[in-house]
Length: 274
Length: 274
Image 1: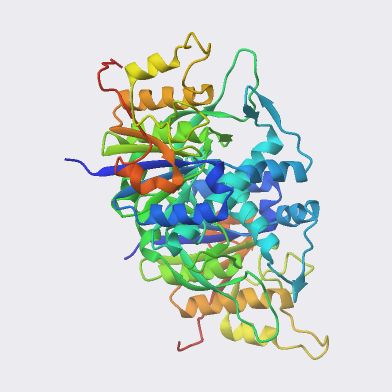
Image 2 (image 1 turned 45 degrees about the vertical axis):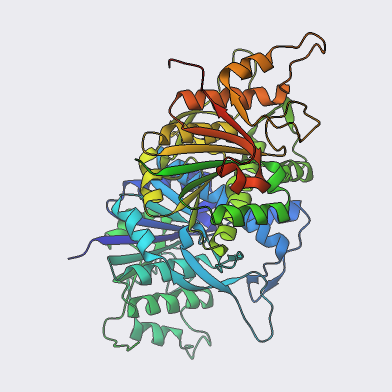
């Protein structure tokens, strides 16, 4: 039986809240076993861009990464956020190391190609250096990964943190029983997006397909549109070897790990060939 | 016979010049053997502070690191500069990993205590994690170290890059024959600070002491005052096990390594007990 590895992704709602971040890192540090923390951005990059007069362009909810924005996200994600998380984990006696995708060629990517939209310096993942991650984890070092990758030709690229968590989880599933945990502001996938008491505790692929379909009487699907890319990724991860995917609140990390909170995503009752 | 390790320090004059940096990194990448690159800051942090309206306080030529300045140097040194150097080295087929002192508890420090001056978040080095460095070097990974350390209680601290290079070189000399190379804007230690043709090729401790003494007819010492802390550190490093210290120009890295350029600092003709 191989070891368990937790790949945990946190976003802006935790990063931007000093108290929540402190509590989460304390809980992360005390989680037994091998761990990789993937963090996103948060408001600091946007705030800094505003202060510096760098205009933020968005297309379909995605930030367009021009030269100045790349500089800002490199500073904020790989510098400020990453190193502060590492220093805090060290204070909680968790020996963490902060890396971006260029470090040790951890995550290689290519500049996103799109027929009509120029996303700028946005990277789509090609490969994860699993040997480096395994070697660090086997030395009882936890990894804190910033969402900046590189193309191996000297270019840093801004990369979606959810995708990094998914790609790392998939790649590492050849060595470990990987538990991929997406933390966000809600208690899980909700039947009613406005009611935290409607958490779907187990979401099978079949059930998911049904919930995605618009319900006739209300004319919209049960699953909130913003959740769909996250859930699609979750099912892909499971089909590519990840043992378990859980979605829930950062404050409930322990309960999520123990299966006592959040939404467990499962392929159960559904066979998928990849 | 133990392996050779190069600990090479670069400063702002290289970091701020894109072409010089490219050429230096190409030369660094092609240097055979185990390597650690320690980088300082450069003008970007000062520029960013100005843009953000953060006033820079200096006492005796040292930057006072207040909360906002610490945020800026963490972003610029450990983020922007560090990750760009790493990405460029990767493009030169040098497998580098960028770390600050908090990463893997690489460099532990304490907040500088001074009877009259409050230096703010400035760190003085306590310990270097030589096991982590050795493990990475033995996996043929080169390290790029940013001058940010931590106190293991969650605080990042701004630390002098010359000192980091010296401390790392000293600590690693228990495993390797360490060559410590300080790169700066001059071709070496000069007899006449305005004449690049007056490089002192070998500087013994005895000779150094003589050159530090003011010469009667000109009323000032031969060695430029700004060099004195660097040279004092160089002699300490040698007395603590570093095999060789060389000072010179980044453009001449190969020649410096081969002993064909720059100033070689040596304890020769001088015995010092530590």
